[in-house]
Length: 126
Image (tube, rainbow, N blue to C red; front, top):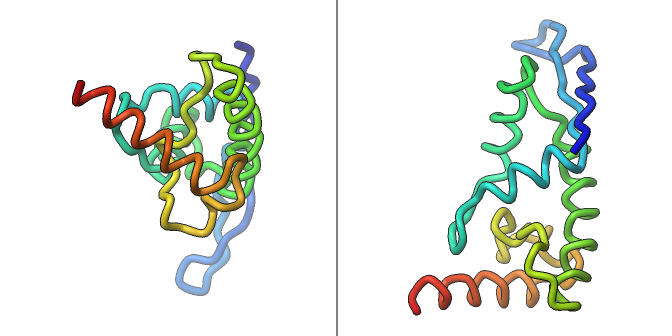
């Protein structure tokens, strides 16, 4: 997958002083690849994924807004794929806390996220 790295510099406040910050603007593929690395039946942390992406690309942070937008895109594609029986769907539910409001805003909603997480836990126990 082609992953063109885009880093922009933005000013942000540190103790009331504006300082430059290198911000990685991730691609959908970058985020999807990291989500795929979260092991079956485990929960990953989107904040940790963002921090890891930033480190890997020499940035201070990964844009949280772009990350959330891409997660929504990934969720739409993955929800459709799972519904059609595709086992290669990006398991976005591994980085979504079903108890947070964001779960309701993703394709399939909270019910889909919980169902997929439960299915994976049962697969591990079997």
